[in-house]
Image (cartoon, rainbow, N blue to C red):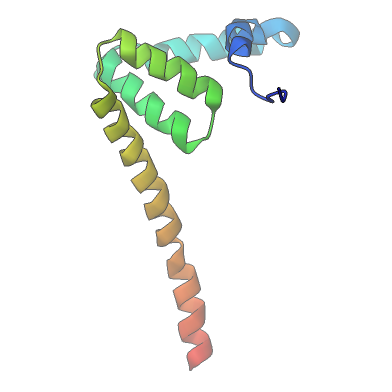
Length: 111
């Protein structure tokens, strides 16, 4: 069997990210906790946002973590897939918005 670059077991090692930079790691986890915990948005809403971002950023560790978190919060596969489609449409929109630059150059060269 081929070796996989990303191994789901490595996700369990993430809390040790402080190993070579304790102050920065501690600051990250404080920020991460305050950003992802319930606030004006519920933990459920934030978990769906995180799941969509995990997909747009192509992070298999984050996809594993937030799929599991969403399931633990009672979110359905339909809700999670809808969030992923929101993320996908945002990426597509950003790519297409940059076509404005291409169109501007094409129009300039057609003059």
